Length: 279
Image (cartoon, rainbow, N blue to C red; front, side, top):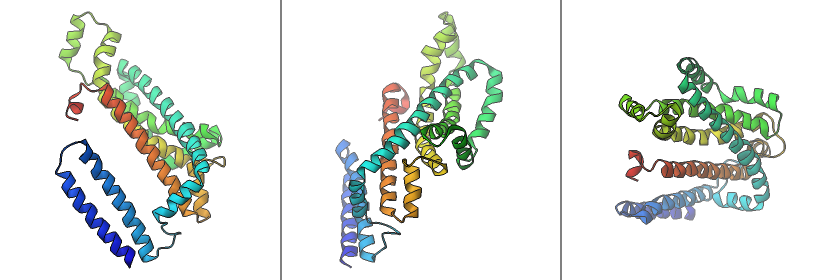
C-alpha cells in the first residue's frame, strides 16, 4: 500500500511541476517538462508493479529491467551491432540512396512517373511479414537478408517523397532559370533539389523508423544467434521478460537517436525553409 501512496504523491508532484514549467519560456523549461514526465512515468510504473505485486512474467519493474540491462550489456551490444548497425543502417543507406537516384531518373522521364509510382504504392502496401521470409530464403540468415528487407521497406516512401519534391517548383521559377541559360542539371542542382529537400527529409524520417522495425521483424524469420528480433523471440519462450524489455529499451533509444539525427541534419540543410525559421 505504501508503494501506491508514494506513486500517487509523485504523480501529483510531477503534474504540479509540469503545469508550472509549461507556463515558462526557455530551453531549460522545454527540456525539463518531458524529463519530469518520463521520470514520473517510470516511478509510477515501479510503484504499481510493487504495490499490486504484479508477476515479473507479466510486467517486470523498471528496477529489474535496469538490473538486467547492466548484467546483459555485452549481449545487448552484440544485438545492437547485428540489428541496428549491420541490418538497419546498411539497408537504410542502400535503400535511400537507390530511391534518390531513381527519383531523379523518374523525374526525367514522364512515362516512368506514370508507370512506376503506382507500382511503388502497391509494393509499399505489401505486408512485411510476407516479404521477410522470402528475402531471408534468398539472402540467407545473416544480416544481409535483414538489410534487403530494410531496402524494400524504405525505398518507396523515400522515392514517392523525392519525386513529389522535385516537382515542387513553379513554372515562373523554371522559366527564370531558362532565362539564365541554365540547363537541366544546373536547374536540378540549384533549384529543384533545394526545393525538394523538405520532402526528401520527410521521407528519410519516415524511413528511419521503418528501417529498425524491418530489421527486427526480419530476424523473427531466421537469424544467427544474435540480433534483437532473435533475442526477443527466444527470451519470450524462456519467460525472460526483463531481457525482452531491455531489448525494447535499446530499440527505442536507437530509433529515437536515429530519427533525431536525421531531424538535426534536416534543420541544418533546410534552415532557409519557412518550416524551420520559427524553431
